[in-house]
Image (tube, rainbow, N blue to C red; front, side, top):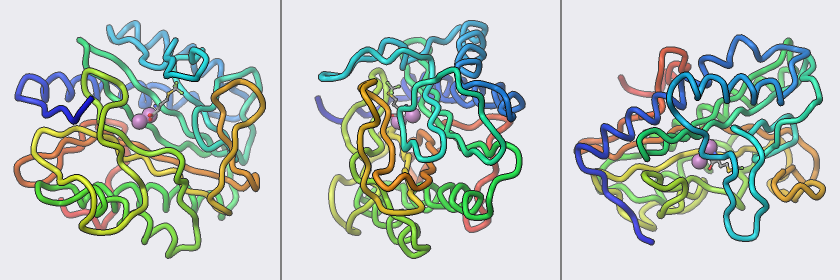
Length: 267
Ligand code: MF3
Ligand code: CO
Ligand code: CO
């Protein structure tokens, strides 16, 4: 499979799917409080997708070598890096949680995630969450025709490591369109001027996973999905789906509840 370039109709399809994914997160936001279980969050999301007329891309998703993914979204708490499976354990004050939603609408996929802090959290956790958001945006602002994927990875890595955090290497952003995971891979580390040149019509995700401690990760237990930090340090992640336009980028996974871009991003 190769990179797909979206025409005007494809871009409209992507805009709709991506907005709907972001609106699922808007809907969930007020519920993410101490005491709710991640399974309840999953149920709320499934109900809301039904109302939207979208379907979950993750439910039953089964890449080669994996068991079918059993939920409508991913919930990755504290030292869980990604692909956390919703469960019966209530969230508690001080937790940080990534909620990652991918919907399908009219055959198009929209993929986005945000971090949530549960009650009061430590200053270190808050800083990781907010700096990971900025790290994602340092990648996004690189996007324009003629730039290269290595420019995105480098910008994220330089920013995150400059703050003393580490960048997960084993998982990356990805092309997206009529399939969940397309080419290219979008690494969150790298060298400027290297890798694929960006061209208008490409759509891909930028979704850095940033750890407070060491960058190494491992599989957790035997569910076949959950990834945790090897040193059990906290991990944060944000994700947007972006379009390469003629002049720069358009963030597709935006909705009324999206946090504003950091101040370093030009309007
Ligand atoms: N949404 C994730 C991503 O950003 C993928 C989750 S796959 C699942 O690529 F099966 F774990 F849900
Ligand atoms: Co993704
Ligand atoms: Co995602």
